[in-house]
Amino acid sequence: MLFFIRSVFVLIVLSLLIGGIVLVHHVENRIPQISYNEFLQALDKNEIEEVTLKGQVISYKDAYGRSFSTYCPDVKGILPELIKKGVIIRGQPDRPSPWWNLLYAGLPTILILLAWYSLLKKPVKDESSDEFAKDKAVKFKMGVKPVTFRDVAGIPEVKDELLEIIDFLQNPKKYSRLGAIIPKGILFQGPPGTGKTLLARAIAGEAGVPFYSISGSDFVEMFVGVGASRVRELFREAKKKAPCIIFIDEIDAVGGHRGTGTGAGGQDERGQTLNALLVEMDGFSSEETIIVLAATNRPDILDPALLRPGRFDRQINILPPDVKGRHAILKVHAKKISLARDVDLEKIARSCPGFTGAELAALVNEAAILAGRQGKKEVELTDFEQAQDRIMMGVERKGLVIGEKDRKTLAYHEAGHALLAKFLPESDPVHKITIIPRGKALGYTKQLPLNDRHAYSKTYLRSRITMLLGGRAAEEVCLNQQTTCSEDDFEQAVAIAIKMVCRWGMDERIGPVSYSRLQDSFLGDQTTNLQYSEETARSIDREVKRLIDECYQEAMDILRHEQDFLTSLAEILLINETLDAEEMDIIYECVTKKRRESKAKLGEMAPELSCDMDLETSREDSSVPGQDAA
Image 1 (cartoon, rainbow, N blue to C red):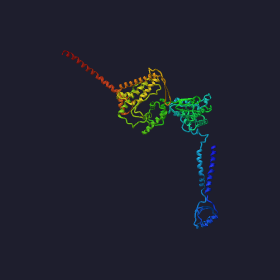
Image 2: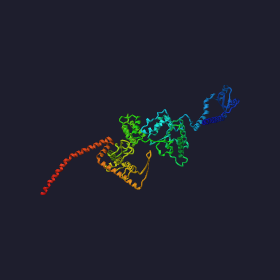
Image 3: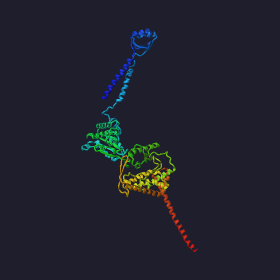
């Protein structure tokens, strides 16, 4: 209302100002008026050179260049006299267009008013509107197709835990009559891409209540106090729409630890915003059914006051899905594409352990893009394998030229990995071997675990170290050389060995103790705090080295025993560049068959060789007496 009054007042002032300017301009530039008698006298003296007729008003210029105007009572009578004197006569319409005059007078006023209005424009709050918190919050409209739990897969335990939240929003009296109070806040914490935002939207879609979404970074602006104001406006609007859900994505942007002794600046602004959020979450009355959902992948930096009971009562961990969850997620996304009949989604799910929901969605989409690029009508299994290689290893480096010697080294290196993976106990089966460069890797051996592992045995870990060392061992056995291809293999092998000795107590000499304290975050960062003496450190170094040496010697022994298989595998890999598990088994069967045939031939030749040896022996025995006799 105040803005409207001020706008009207400014309009009046501007109109008066523009009108005064126009009036002054008109007075200063108007032509002096004289009497009709003076006009006739000037005409008789031949002092008039030009006249302009506009109705009954005559404007003229005399011989001295002066302009005058007068009112003529008889224009028709004066015209012959003007023609007789040779005066130039001009005419103008009696009435000019009134709209032109209005536009001429009002255009400056309109332009100034528009400029003023654009500078002073402020959003007028509409009580019935869904826009609030200065256009930062978004209310999902109920007309749009809602997201439900049918669109969420791979996290059944989380869905079961959230069913009571939905039940409370739909049937609040069922719990309130027993004195139960619904949790005010639920915090979803987990790695990026695990479906935290999708799960929050599914809750709102299942419950059928208004759902307000805002990002944590939207609360913080360059102006002090804006964040706290937006928090208050957000909860004020939510109370009007209760029961409803407020979802704050990436809450760590505003809910981080409050520092001590902070002054003016960004940290102080974040502290004020967080204080406003804490106060609003405490201010819910029992009649207001408002649930605050929040998501973060950095729960370790959140302020403890935000996590206490009464604010975020429940903290739900959303981790990457297991093999069943990945299979369910792939089914959801595979409904959107044309899938070939030979595609086994369960096999694809087993081949990508650790993938999040977002990565699985990207896998299906990338496979569809690859199939479309080749003009296929359906997405086939090969498209999924190529898409998985592209996501995990990177784009195929078709322009990289590798020399024949380096290709041979890569072939024997990868063949060593694959051979050991086939013969070592509890090792994951080999899925594919390739020497095609992708990303930073010049080649790789891909293993396909039968199931997700949550507890690793000592045998499995030793086999893993031995398999990683198989590349270098194969180079030494067959090529008698050492190259830099094993750098990443050594890093992984030593890391596993250190964990076996220092963390998991799998060394007989060190014993069942843990000497390190590791704090893992959802982002994969680790903070290590080593707690042992220098003498223990030397013992740990010795045991790690001993474990690596034993595994390397085991790899050398197996490769020497299966050297013919290793050579055949590497030579065929040089030709085809990529081999799968079935082709590898065929090669092994052929090598084994040749071995049996060779042994059989040696067995047949063994009696003949023994008879020849007996004959030679008897000849030597018979010649001895003769010599003695001689």
